[in-house]
Image (cartoon, rainbow, N blue to C red; front, side, top):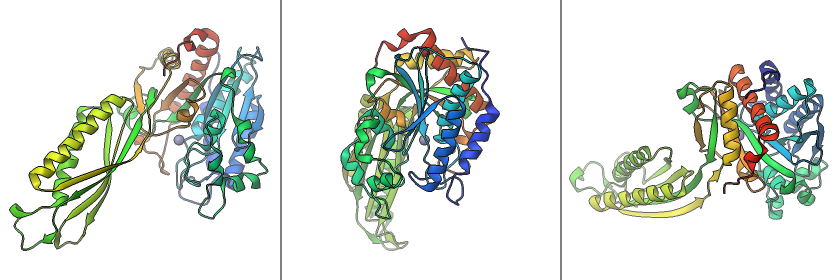
Length: 423
Ligand SMILES: [Zn+2]
């Protein structure tokens, strides 16, 4: 059941989104890279809002900011709510920030209503999720989850500043990164609210949805080899055109992905050799990226995709070569937390739908520490990592209300919901 007494202030969320967006390098959209002066001024704003909402604030050695709202039972495990405060270059105002501001908003509402839940709540603004500056993602959430590795401190940015150096310049002690790690025994679970960064909620006409999991990705590089020749003299019936073969294969990849929704498959990069208007393409180098939460289904589709490549290449007298570049495992959201989000959504009169996140989030790193759950909020046309990124005040208000009701469900009404852990 939704708690009607506790009213989310959507205007306050919207005002804070704008204020935080002003902490940016001069750029189109928002550019706030980790550990820069713009980042630090954004963090100062967050600190003030946390204090105004009745929280005590600490900053750990990786520059994560954490606001704590005590519970009525101080020894009870904490419920964590977080997202990131860094952006991409020329990014939007909502990606990451909405999760932190929504977390602060729900504590603010509890504080204004003189309400203390049994368990403490901690709101986390993670230091680096996008990985733009050091090309290493989830720095803050890995430190808190206890999976941060020492060698990451030596990674350098384009100016030659190491991560350790950047943190030391802020007066932090990065080599004590272990002090940022939380003890899983003291944590009840982790929640993250994030804009969807995709178009499904808009297409469904829904303000928010439940994330079932974060897809694992497999990435390959491939080479299709034919034979280059004169574009004017070789008849099309006698060609070994590597690009024409690749094109046929890409259409087959699209067909297989459509047959296996919600899997997504993308050929995102192609290099045509020699790449001249009067030469038949002799070679194509490219990348294939496939994502799904279901590893078995993903592996079957990958097998079919490669079988199709072999068949097309045999038919066209081309050769196919593929190499795996990267593989990440999917992260599933906890069934108990997901059920709590679902009842919070139902209590707010919204049809619950389940979405797979194709993008990575801090929740992936936090899954190593505790049970996770995620709420997606509709964003206009699914646009993200772009100055055009937009979520309406109404949707942000509903998203924060669902977050608050989920916390209440978890903490007050049904703690047993968390007993079952889904791996
Ligand atoms: Zn994000």
